[in-house]
Image (cartoon, rainbow, N blue to C red; front, side, top):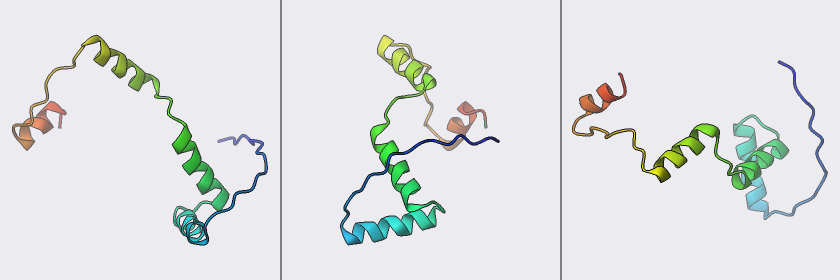
Length: 84
C-alpha cells in the first residue's frame, strides 16, 4: 500500500502540564506519536461531514421514509431481525 506524504505546517501550542502528560500517555497507549495523536483528536473534533450512507439515511428520515419497526420484545426477536 502506497503512502502519500502530507505537508504540515509547524505551529506551537501551550498545554497545562497535566494535560500534556495525559496526551503523551494516551499517544503511547495507542502507539502513535504525540503529534499524530493530537492531530487525530483535533480532526475528530472539527470534521463533521457525514458519509454518503448517513446522508441518505438523514434524507430518508426527513422525508418520512422508514425502514420498518424493530422488534425489541425479546433478544431472539431482535437477533432474527438482524439476520443472526
